[in-house]
Image (cartoon, rainbow, N blue to C red; front, side, top):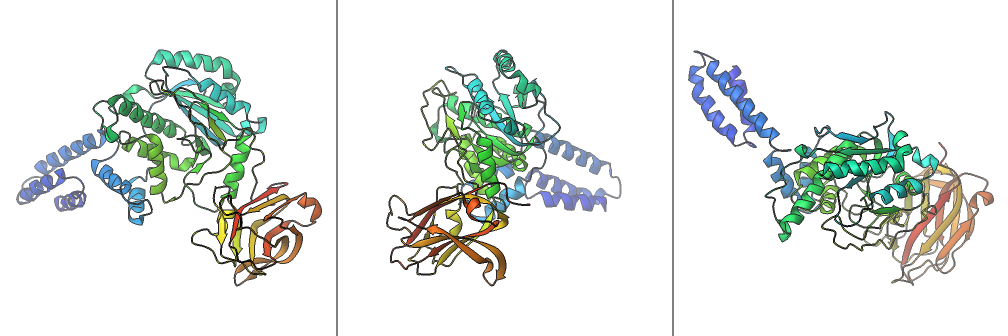
Length: 496
């Protein structure tokens, strides 16, 4: 009976591991001997288990898993079948078994809000790591510093270079190391997969393939280390300048996305600068980079990862919070003059846009739905010609004190698709209706002029905590309507 049970279990696995078929045949032949002795069976079983152990340890995942994921990446990213395949295969809850060297600092027991990860190697020309670290700390307030931890992975195999650089980091940022805000680590070369004989995808030269493949592993080991340090993780490069109070701006964006699904939020349009993740996704992302380390560059893999986890569209915020400042690339010291023209040095004026539900009775064109006007992402609401009395309403999840409201309509290439006649109102006293929650009492703040409106000191003009903001069409128009952006600033966090 034991023999039959083991044969059944092996048969269940045989679809993914061809060698099991041979073992099954052998076990079938052995059934006639089961009454004589169980020793041959035990020998085969032990041999099989040893083989499987060696087979599993020779790589990070089974080749069959790699094949399925490769197939998934070749299909449209919104394919539900392949999204589910990816989620099943990569349900990695544990970290990768790597013993890191702590070059400076140690993790604190208390989790922070944000981990900022940097990976750095020796460059042939220039080194911007110290400037990047300085910018992170200098552009953060004392209160913000309490909520971040910076992890630097010195990923070069030249240990003398690593030791020299960590001494310089310790001299310049010793107080941040002591405070637990800065950690410097190194993953030993022995943990890296083979970097020889790699696939030459895209006809890249061998040295470039080796560089980008190692870079994928560098980032995988960095992500793996940072898994339990904070709630969120920000990926930066080692040649970046930060905007002032970037953490406060970032937290505003995260708060505005509460209740919505996202995998990656982007705060720069360049490479893998300013990419934000939930820390709970880091083990899966680390395994993903290792699985495909030799297939393509890291920024391409990040796009596939986002799509396979069912975030079809890019969610990128303006203004950008991070700017590339390096002049020479870490690959062969080649010139790299890329700049993000959406970067702003001062990010304090980013709106708060508290979590809310959005409604409109204007006929929506295609996928330009109401939510797109309320986001910091570069997109907008687009509706067909509105009539008198049509509305667009924002219903907050919690009553909120608003200090400033700014709304713009139309775009540079569709300057006539503005709200020609409209009013801005704020409301209170929520009631339930067939179409959802609505305010029963409104006060008018002002009229739109040339398609725009901006109202300051709202909290001084309105005595109640606002529960709704409504745009009302006061005269029909033949032109369609684009609401490009709705920006709200609060005087305090939404009431709890």
